[in-house]
Amino acid sequence: MPEVLILTAGYGEGHNAAARGLLAACEELGIEAELADPFTALGAAYDRSRAQYLDVINRFPKLWAAVYRCVDLLPLVEFSLPGLMPVLQSLADLLTEKRPGVVVSVYPAYGYLLAKLYPRRETQPFGFHTIVTDSITINRVWHRCRSDTFLVPNAASAEAMRAQGVSRERIHDLGFPVPPRFARDRPLRRNPGAGEKGRVLYMINAGKSRAPAIVARLLAVPGIHLTVTVGRDEALRARVLEAADGRDLELHGWTTQMPELLMAHHVAIGKAGGAAVQECIAAQTPMIITHVVPGQEEGNARLLCENGCGAIEETPDAIARRVEQLFAADAAEWRQWHANIVRISRPDAALRIARFVTSPSPGQAP
Image 1 (cartoon, rainbow, N blue to C red):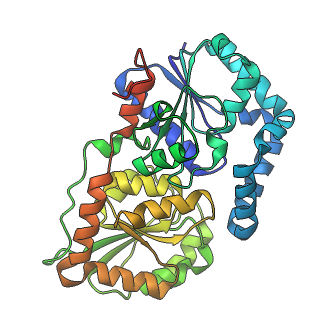
Image 2 (image 1 turned 60 degrees about the vertical axis):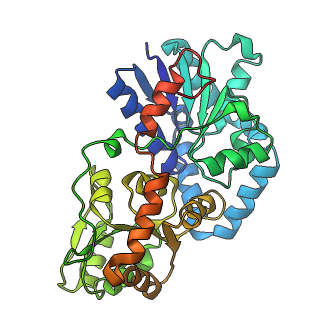
């Protein structure tokens, strides 16, 4: 039987990334753990809802901002629970079968579902902890439910939750559970300047229509090495190669080596997703943000900008100018950004969280 049951859901990559990071940490520490997504009980409706979620946040950001605000102010999750009965039953069956000692959720709905299964906290036969995957702009949906603790990615998020009325003793600032690979075996990365090219990693995960123009403009920046990731999108790969027009470019499709790629580059370019931002921080790689989804991603962007290790640039020319500026004058600005991101980097956060949730008294941080 697993000592730790990790509950995730497929609405946004940040949740799954946090779940996988914690699972890897448990395995590394010899802690029996298992990952599950009870939302799969919805079948085809789950696939449709995830596709609709991505469609709204990418095509109708103002509409998503309004939805996000409503979820923050109103108990919409509580109202939607009758429609989640297959998920509730799947979760109940899973808990009966696995009998975990600890349940960790990286998606806010599970706190509400567990409250339906165990209306009285004393009847709940396991510890329950919630990993908050957003930063600074914390939606109240995360903490209107019952949870023994809330594990947040940074001090600013802890302060935001305290300001929303969550008691100090329930909030623990342990970091975001990126894969433990970030905490060990870091590849050699020489500082840019003095003949060392600035290594730029462009992760195309939003705004694909303007990606070829960004690639073309970056390839015109002298003295850099450009790496581009396109995932499984073969049409995008072809458009990127066309934009490169024979110029030197390192191109990757879907890869399991993202931690190593991030740690080997000096600056990353991409959208302000929770996983992307937190993995950049763990890699100690400053970030240029090209796209911010209103609501949950605003805090991720603020985290980088307010700590002086990132900036928001949305056009190809602005992105390229920022890259040039970072590496100018012996990379003086990049060196400052790098020093700032090192101060907030906690690549071993998943290991910290795994030890915390399995400690005899997980009300106290390790």
